[in-house]
Length: 113
Length: 111
Image (cartoon, each protein chain N blue to C red):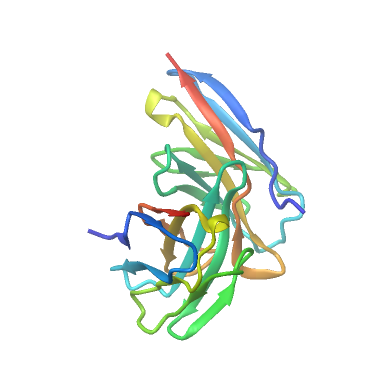
């Protein structure tokens, strides 16, 4: 089954404790992206990747890092999480950006205390 | 600066057509318009996309105006399961790899 998976689905952590949210897709898609969703603000793009070793900033990249060492994986790294990064995070992938649909993962709900 | 403008909410009676409008006045000539929906806090689900011509699939129809500055998503026979937030999306014209979701329209389908 074609899908995007994210882990963990739920995470409660404390300020400053480094964490990684994993994202994996099994569709051989070149484009992958991370979004965060906050009440009243909709989905905002954090980072995206056009292919292996090619990443770039979205609208809200501050406080986040990403890497794309393999085509199927696109982890989101929070080196020093802060409470304002409490949010619902979605990973997505697509064959090509802008001309094909994005497939979204189930989401990761992160709480930073 | 907003790339898309949608009404915050709409109601629709079950079984009737739901027409969801979107303004995208700054869209560039080669940018597609995409529609997604999100049920509760699940991952957004692709519905349909188009460039110039009207499009139809098993879920919905997409009507794009001739000047491409606005579009309408039509759910022909709305059901209670269509209650969701519907997002109209265009790429950011200064960077074709970025996507702007906007705040969407909450569609309430009522019995």
